[in-house]
Amino acid sequence: MSRLRHETGTVKVDVLIGTDGRVQKTRIEKTSGYVRLDDAAQATVYDSWRCRPYTRDGVPVAKWYGVPFEFNLE
Image 1 (cartoon, helix red, strand yellow):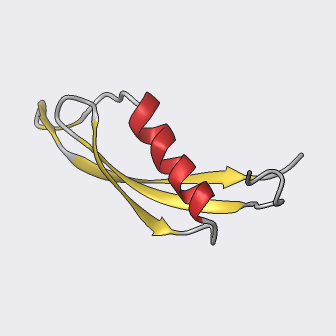
Image 2 (image 1 turned 60 degrees about the horizontal axis):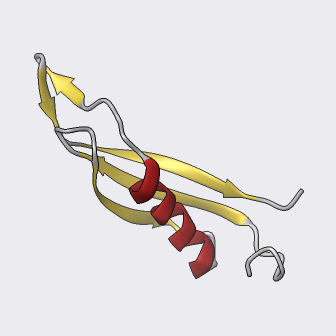
């Protein structure tokens, strides 16, 4: 639907990576201006991301990361 409507933009998603390397939470820091694009960015993170957790003194700790997602038509 977004492609048909020529919706483009950049979404900045804050992602909380837990001590197990899985996504615990997301929040939109900067919207693209289109709910569909914002939702797609968050769904991508939840559905497919697995990360190595941040460690402090060798112990895994949860940490927030900011990640931009760019949607464009080419």
